[in-house]
Image 1: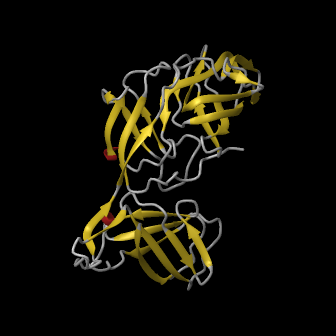
Image 2: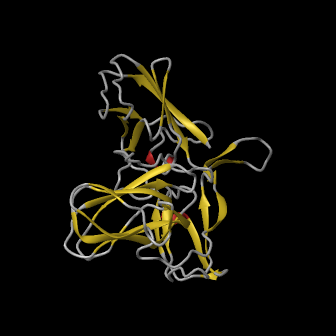
Image 3: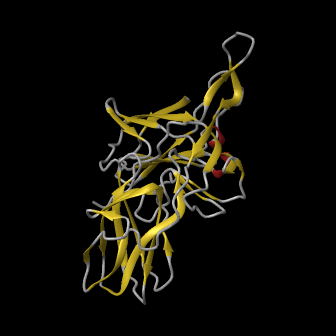
Amino acid sequence: MTFRTVSGTLSAAVADAATFTASYPAPGAPENAALTDAGDFFNANGHKLVIGQNDAYSFPAQFDVTLGTANITITNRSGSTWPAGSTFQLQLEVPGKNAYAADGSGVRMARMSRGDVYLINLGAPDALVTNGVMAQQNRTNAGALIVNGTLAVGGVVELDKPRNLIWRSGGADTAVVTVNGRDEYDKPMSESNTLSGTTAVNGKKAFKKITSISTGAAIANTAYIGTGNVLGYPVHLPSIGLVLKELQDGTAAAAGTQVAGFRAAGGHLATSADVRGTYTPAVAPDGAKVHQIVVCLPDGGDRGPTQFTAV
């Protein structure tokens, strides 16, 4: 990737969750436009911010970037206040890899970057199991539930593939139930959903392991949790428009449902979408069908922002 920088001085103190604005950086050669704009940095990641001489921050964990029409808004997520009068330098990454002229001059092509094409193998996921994570159970107050579904071994569920979970209740329960576990890179993650009577509630995040479950209120009508058909990406998908083809057993598949990886201002929540993105095949997994995705990515090493975790 390449990047552009803009610098300045903070006119006022910027507390945690507060913002300041910066102009768009002037482009480097060979572009001829007077200024860059939001399109130059769309769907990029890895931005960096230096406040003062020594305090360096990373996006999106410690600051947010909102690309406006005329200015860039930077939101402080560092947990500390940036003092008035501090200098700042914002490094904005440009998505993709540099493309160079074929004449041997070493000059970078204007308004172009290279994205690599990847074949993502989602495997042959098993059919969903409605009570695979947590068997039906009640609770008279808030507290821990038991990971005792049909897929559990020793109080832990290790899923065949990273995939979503489905929350269910046998009656009119509306408790918030939180699942804690790990993703496929063994990073801690959590997701919370509110039981909706007998209506199944589909989770958005792709778990690989489930280690604990808790409820925020009493459950009178037996809640239970199982696996779903939403499969997790192993890499951050910045936009669903980058998906080139869906395959089932090596041939073109009917269009499924793609969800881009979560990366938005405001921070990751227990109810946010998956940090890397998900795919729901048009034909449900059954343990035999092989699902693959062909996708063009500006950064094939991007695992997305840090997972939300409640513990």
